[in-house]
Structure formats: structure tokens, C-alpha cells
Amino acid sequence: MVWGRKQKPEQPAEAATSAAVEIEAAADAALRDSLGLYHLWYLERRLQEELVRAPRNNSYFSLATWRLRMLPGETPSPELFARAASLISNRLRSYDVYARIGENRLIAILYDADFQTASTVAFRIKADMQVGIASSGRWQAGVATFPADGVDSESLINAASRRLAEDARAA
Image (cartoon, rainbow, N blue to C red; front, side, top):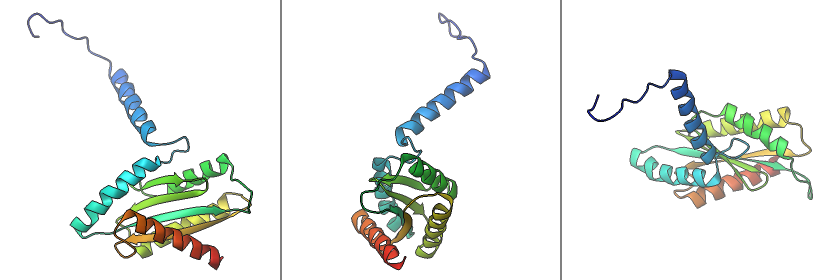
């Protein structure tokens, strides 16, 4: 006891645990949207960090993108993307970052994944979404890998988008 100060009463362990859970939930809510996907600003920040880290460590990473191609004038339902977000989060590793871009496109940073590995993951998720999520559209997938497809975020995103278009033509 310090002289002149009252000793703080001990908090029960469960109160401390619930406070820690609340703090963690608040921090997670700042990074994620209503679907459980990371906000786009966070994905962009992590992508920039990875573009600095990967050359320094002589490593690689990939961007995987998915898009729901629908008929002109159709819009996807929020429930459909909630199911897609849940499926993606369950299929990716806990440290991969995934977000929604625009109305009908999803993207993920797959750390330490070369093109072959990332393509396998992306197209398996695409197949799971096509079979498991009923919709009038078709899911497409595209992958770009650092440094083979580009050394900056714009070139990687463009390469992944180009591969989405190639997947659309192949279907």
C-alpha cells in the first residue's frame, strides 16, 4: 500500500475478462463492416505494408478477387454477400485480409501464397460459392501475385481484374 492512497478493490476475474472482450469487440468493429469484412481502407493499408515488407524479405503474396456476374440491371442482395463473406472468412487463414470492393466484388490479400497456391484457393472458394450460394449470377475469380504481376498496388489490382475478365470469357 502506498501511504495516503486507498487501495483499489480487487475486480472479479470475470469482470476483467468481459471488459477485455468488449475492448476487443470495439477494436474489431472499427476494422470490419456489417458483413464481417475488413473495411477497404484497412485492406489498402495492409497492402501498402506488404508491398514494403515483401521485397525486403524476398517473399511474395497474392491478391485474390471474386465477382458475382449478373444480368444487366440486376443487383445482388445483401444476404447473398453476407453468405459469401462468411464462406470466404471460413476458407481463408486467420491472418489473410479480405474486403468488399464496390457492389459486387470481393478481394483478399493472401500472405506468403504464390500464384499456384492462391489460384487453387481462389478457385476452390469460387466453386464453393457457386454451389453453396444460390443466385442468378455466376461467380468469377482472379489472382495476381507480387512481384510477377506487378510491384505496386495499382498494377496488382489491374492484373487481378484482368484475370477476372479472363475467367468471365472462359465460362
